[in-house]
Every structure is written in C-alpha cells, then in structure tokens.
Length: 104
Figure 1: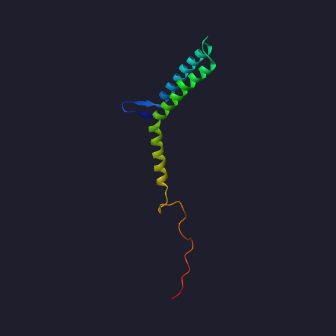
Figure 2: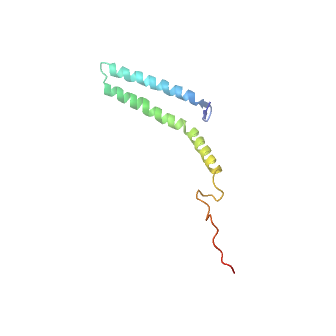
Figure 3: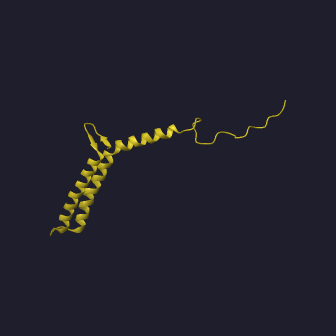
C-alpha cells in the first residue's frame, strides 16, 4: 500500500480516495437539495457542486499528492541516469570507421 507522509502521520492513498468519494457524495446531496428546493435552481445546484465540491477537492488532492509525485519523478530520473551512455550524451559515438592514415 502506498502512503503519503505528512508532517505528523501517514495517510494511505486508499484513505484519501475514500475521503474524496465521501466529500463528493455530501456535495452531491447538497446540490440535489438545492435543485429540488422550492427556492433553489438547477443552475445554483451546478454551481454548488462545482464550486463547493469539485474545485476544492481537486486543489486538496493535488496538494496532498505532491510528495508522491515528487518521489516518483526522482525515481524516474534516477532510473534514467543509470542508463545514460558513458560519454554523457544520447548520440552515437564518433566515426564508426577509423580515418585513413598516410604512410610516412
């Protein structure tokens, strides 16, 4: 199981997904109540869902997953640097045929 480490405790990615689904459910119920209310509108329900649910959740998930993205990027860079050619470039090494030499 993959863990995201914060300053004081570890949160599994499963727990984060569970919280995200629960929050979306709560906001969806709020939007449904807005849409079916006698004073509510469907447009108000859409804005409630987007601005109170999806946007804040996207920001929180992005921030919470930043350490995991950073670790994955560093691991990919280390794996890529292990396969680098000895001359340090990704191009072919010099001429394949030795240059012709003049006899003295």
